[in-house]
Every structure is written in C-alpha cells, then in structure tokens.
Image (cartoon, rainbow, N blue to C red; front, top):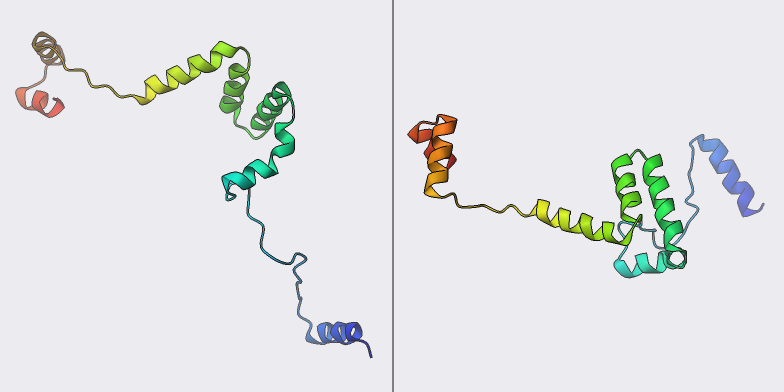
Length: 125
C-alpha cells in the first residue's frame, strides 16, 4: 500500500475538509509592508518605462478605483513642468497656518463688527 492511498482513505474516513498550503517558506509581505529596498527591487522593471506611460497608467488606475480627484491631480501635474511646482507651493501654503497679530485698530474693528461682548472677545483672542 503506498502512502498516497493511505492518505486518501484517511481523508475520506474522517469526512473533514483538509486544506493544504501551496506555498512553503517565508510568508510574502504586501507591497505596503515591504521595505524601501524591496519596493525598489519589485518596481525595477516599471521604472524602466517611459514617464508619460507610467503617469497615464497611474491616472487610469486611480480613475478606475474611484479616486477621481487624485486622478485629476496626476493628470494636471504631468501636463507641464511648471504645474508640479505650482501644486507643491500651493500645498506648502495650505499646510502652513500662520497666525497674524492684529493691530490694535484691527482688533477693535473686529470686536465692534462682530458685536462681541468683552468676555467673548477674550475667548476668541
């Protein structure tokens, strides 16, 4: 009696479903979990492609996955070389939250226009 027939009978006799893992060794990590070096190695062939081809593919994949805003940004960024610089500077400006000190006249103006009580003004200030 060979080993495979005994194994088959044991599975039929128990009636339980047995699942075998098809892959052996170290489990694969997702791309997001991979290190920077592994990502570079996995994308080596992609990086040899033309920039226009990659940006178009990125645009289409984002659009197909329902991320239309991101798709439009990628499309806009690759239209001209100056657009990327403009997007970058606009992004930096939006991230900066600069507090500007009001002059005494400006503070008084805001206080009067908003109709704030002194306590409310001090809370806002």
